[in-house]
Amino acid sequence: MNPFLFLFQSGLDFVSSTMRAKSQQDAFSANAEELRRAAYIEEARAVDAVARGGVQASRIRQEGARAAAEARQALVAGNVELSTGTAATAQEASSMLSEFDAQLAKNNAAREAFGFRESARRLNAQKKQLTREYQADALNQFIGFGARTTERVSGFATASTTTRKR
Image 1 (cartoon, one colour):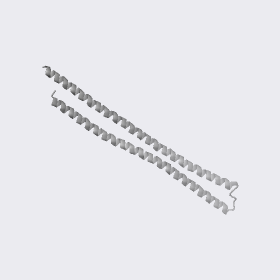
Image 2 (cartoon, helix red, strand yellow):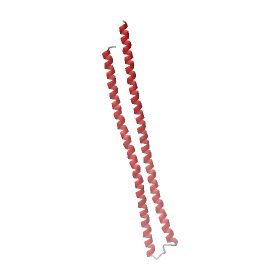
Image 3 (cartoon, helix red, strand yellow):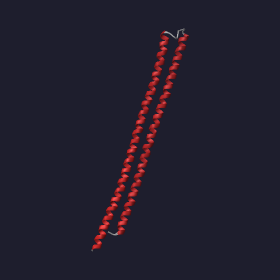
Image 4 (tube, helix red, strand yellow):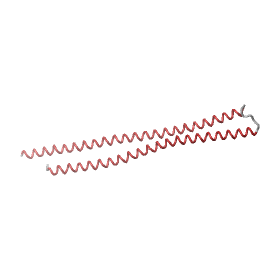
């Protein structure tokens, strides 16, 4: 084998491997960044869901307090004793229902946030898997290049010794 041809083939293989590795690294980086951003957005959605649940619970409590105050005003206007009997029971039940609705809103928000966090966890796991695959592929390319070069060197050495024996 001609030594210049050997060097040319090895150089061409090196350039080809390097260009392939660079394009794969670019694709990996883009995919990893997309997964990172998607996970970040899901985490932000989870935080937002909890905050919205708190706000909704506060509104429900305010509406319950407003309804109870309007009922008290109506009862006072009708000369009804507020601290005993049906009036007191109605106010207590109204307050409990408002608190139940507020807790339900917070619970629903927590459930929604859990879904977003689970989605973010899956996206991060995908990113880790993608990273492992990229690293394994890069190692395989490096080993493959080394094996091809070794094969060429041994082929070149065999061809050189065969040529010298003649």
